[in-house]
Length: 564
Image (cartoon, rainbow, N blue to C red; front, side, top):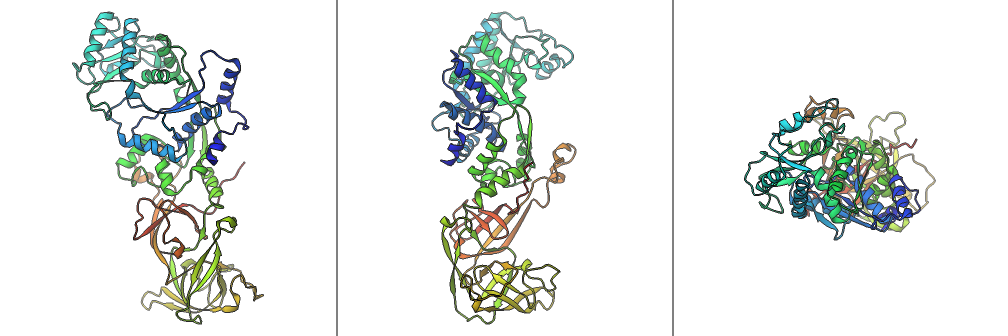
């Protein structure tokens, strides 16, 4: 597949993570068992474009070095996780062509092993059961400038800790009553090393293990051990986990796990113009400010897919931005640039009238229908041609007519000629108006039969060409127009304002009475087209039905991306 070729292109210059692995391979490090990477999402939400960036790094590195790529669902918090999210994550990854195939794992499958490892830490004097409340644990941690205080339970005997930990497992204590903590250093300059919590009690039903467990491991404890159990060689994560690396290594070293996976960090991607925070996304969904996780204004994979973005354009976007060591910010217009570049030669260019104005061609024979041949894509002859019906009554865009044209207006006006795309020259003769409102309701025009497209019979020239749809054959459809969700780039910084004040009121508009040429009557769900002069559109998978098509505007025709 085209995407896979992009991902596995070994001729591309290596980024710093690939160079690190290449050096390890050259040195033939004894603990390198063949490259194995992973993507470990918590199944408590839907994937978004930022996740695709992280997946691409891990997936492409594994492919580049002939290794393996794992999808591991980090399901160690029963309060937020659900099988709905698991299924969505797997489906989205397959659509993005990051298919984990059979290498799908669940953190909850390692519960017994993680418990046994915790028992081993207790026996080695490296972990203890603490009775401090969550607030007290936080207060005892100290600050960035002041050391923390040791818990009064820190020096419990091994026997007492083993007994309490076993009773925690048996469900003897209520939620939050006790935790298991690592015994490291309460004066460490790294706050993550100040006796971090390894296990907490949560009496809640788990979507996979049911009520078998009532205590669950913390991410910083579970993650390195899950990596080790699966044989992960390189644990690549974003830069905010750099301060967590010492704890990652402490867990593995304290249990003498060899060979140990290596955690390495890459710069986090920030996309200007999109909401990628899972917390913010959840607020938008739960608050009913948007349709759901698949709202086409969201950067979720489901939202991008429903709007009409393609896996190819997303791969090209990820390939272009590369892998950085530091925080990087990219404008969403770059993704749109690659989307247009992909669609302009791969989808049919069709005629769709979004705001119709009726035109009766008075000198065209009544009842006559011509089937005109029009190329499906002017830039790609391989997409072939189609037949488009032409008749006495057609519809044009209302904005393509002006009763009192301004200087430079090159469309239809009284006494002025235009070409109907793929058809004839058209001249406006008479304007019909509503007698009450004065609104223009219909145009009476004449056509020149000697100006049929492709015949070359006339040497007259017209400046404007407009699209049209035959009334008799028109397909009625709804069209949804989308724009940026937020009013401005700084909207998220205003913590005092509600979402009502942050959302762009023009981010969504729906046109109900659009007319399309009959070529689109059987358009499949998620199929994409260029609507002449309007942009690129996709059949909405959620609101379209057998009786009525609904299209989402993916992106306009104008490319605002400027390379510097």
